[in-house]
Image (cartoon, rainbow, N blue to C red; front, top):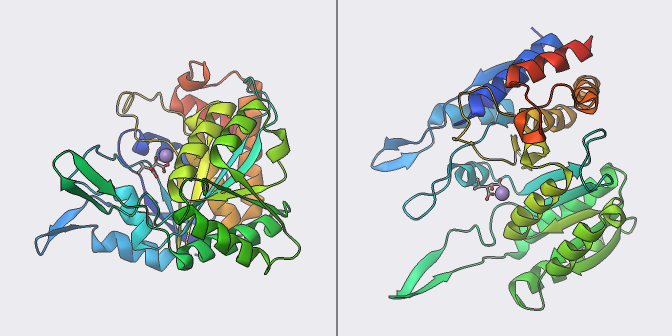
Length: 335
Ligand code: IPM
Ligand code: MN
């Protein structure tokens, strides 16, 4: 039928509600996409818990997936399903744009940042052990290979979006070897991109400067090891109104998964209170990735117009609108 098929992982908690908003808005906008919903709940297979094969095959076949939040239990005995997905498909670059929403007032009205987070290793490599009782070691694994691939991605991405400046955010003063390798790899890779400016900044200084005045960061792409990107992206989300508003894309060579940065919010799940904007904006990144820019622009304009009007805001933004009322308001703006 000339349509694209996209894998849909609705997720836990508020996942199904915010996924419904996306589906409703997409059908109202006549986006040429058929959703293929899959269940990623791990199953026992040959004594191991694994992601169902149908889910994996679906993502491999469709190349793109949209994913709601999956609950990550704290403590040992579990590997986060989110991380398993990133690793399974080798989604090595996590792109996290963070831009002020016109009309939604925060102490900052000039945030326009792009973070690229290494997405497969670093502090997330999951290598930990007890040395002796009361002493543990967690390994931060950095390889030249994974560093090269996310850095090349960052340089290409920076050129592609017309912000030809890449800044590596690091702490090589302390993590001399691991961040040192990331940094020296960045210096090497930067030579492949003579049209992109390259510089570096310490992570703590970047936090201080961004929260003081984010404007000087508007023309750059910030690239960094995994955990720094996790923390810095939440900090930046706080500047524009919180995690209800920030999208992300997990990009690999074979396939990509677009997901909101927030969690499954079990406290408000099932009550129609969730803000679907982050998942919607993630889906916009997905449309752009697929080359469906016409639909991306159309839906994005309707979202921003609705937020700017300020009449239909969800609770996290200080409003009283239900998830479906907000989605309906966006649908009205499409016309
Ligand atoms: C994120 C999340 C995940 C992470 C969790 C859910 C494993 O916080 O996407 O930023 O730490 O990467
Ligand atoms: Mn996070």
